[in-house]
Length: 272
Ligand SMILES: Nc1ncnc2c1ncn2[C@@H]1O[C@H](COP(=O)(O)OP(=O)(O)OP(=O)(O)O)[C@@H](O)[C@H]1O
Image (cartoon, rainbow, N blue to C red; front, side, top):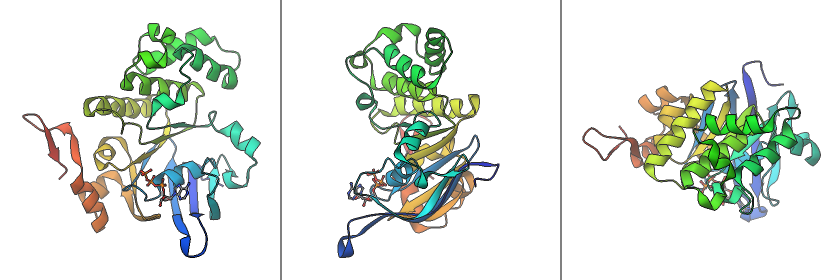
């Protein structure tokens, strides 16, 4: 069971690829929790196991992935023991994902409004959908008129806002954001991150944020888990980890990242 304070509890999760000498322990005995209304960031370099951890939560992992142990407790049940049908019911409605490339998540031949409406039809019965589309676009600071626009008519930042609106259309309890700003330029990254931080407070959303970029963590996450080679090597409250990192790998990740905040006088400054 999840405790009253936590929406998600991942316990001793192990996910492997390949066999014998070729085995890749993508996720190796990993445990973390996301508290209600909190944001947890999984931080680590490429290949450290962040995405496979996040995808494991609703078993969206590639077919070759083998679940070797552990459990993922959400809503009082172990997600790893649910059927595909049960998992489909939870994905999108209780747990929503946003990914790095919003373009691939939209169908190019339909307007944004039409696509949000489809999500509403599936997950929110008995509401005024036109009013709700307008409300959702408003939440992500997009004008109503963009409901009639097609994905290719939007900038990367606008599209990522639409992706967030679409994710919120289902009133999820947990939002999993996998490198949501990596494809965007620095200014737009900042806007989207501010938006996510604001929304997590406004609609009391719990967020699992995946990133290789420690610069993203400081303003957005309440807690941080640092992943290296499938394991969590350091975890704690964000302020505590940023102020006093214990693991050399954490220090390296922090040193490698330019700040997203412009330094006084412009430009970006290295993380202190
Ligand atoms: N379909 C797959 N087949 C085999 N190995 C895989 C597969 N998908 C991921 N892996 C391996 O699992 C490990 C963890 O990958 P994962 O995608 O979780 O890393 P990540 O930290 O999210 O990196 P990135 O930021 O680059 O996505 C890596 O070693 C990767 O090569």
